[in-house]
Image (tube, rainbow, N blue to C red; front, side):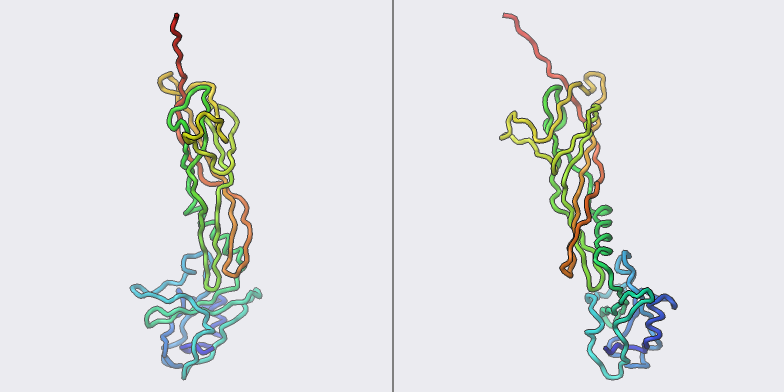
Amino acid sequence: CALMGTLDDASVHAQASGDEPCCGGGSLVPGAGAGNSGGSPYISSWAVGVPGGGVQAPGGVACTPWRPAAEINIQDGAIDVSTVGVDPDGVRRNLYYRDCGSLRQLVWVRDEDPTTIAAIALSDLQRRVIVAPVPDLSPPTVGYVNVETWLATDDPGVLTVTAAIPGLSVTASATVTSTSWSTGDGADDIVCDGVGVAWTPAADDAPAPCGHTYTTHGAEVYDSDPFTITVTHTWHVTWQASTGESGDLGTITGPTATITYEVREIQTIGVQG
């Protein structure tokens, strides 16, 4: 494949292998013939896990998507450079390009295993997307001794993050599988399937699919502290690659939400007669 600039296999190999300093992606001017680029541009290697692979686009200019350099049309005066190589550790690398206005950027991209990119997507899910549960109790703010409290959270649905390098993208998808509750009164933790079931008027006084009955009060009106409830989701994560491959990333624990919950006693008054 013909690439613009004064490149040769030796310089490309040295730069891709880290033997010479690399900038944020080599820049080539489309249409510039050999000897007209003012010297060999650097070609960096895509840095997996770094935003944009560490390749900085020129400011104020829109760039095309990354494409295999093998697709570049042969032009008069260009020097032929291999668009495929092998790193010293035996991993194949491919050359990609994009055009940013009048500049052409080149970068070497190693053949990464999809699981490597899936791990990056998983990390992004945990750091940026998965948040603490939003509790949905019934009664919502004040419970009562010997009256069951329904335990549920808002359903966040399926959360996804896509991580990509030129030529490969992987989407990680997370779904809540269970919710763990610590009710604050010394009882054992309660684990609900999924996000639990929120109470609705149609449920009337039916038992909760996942609930807790307090046997002691906890409220300022009794000179006692409200109970501190903590709730945590467990998520199941899978991945799907643009190559058609897929896999399972297992389960992860999300951040914990903490709320206070008053529990009062229902007073009954007998009337004689």
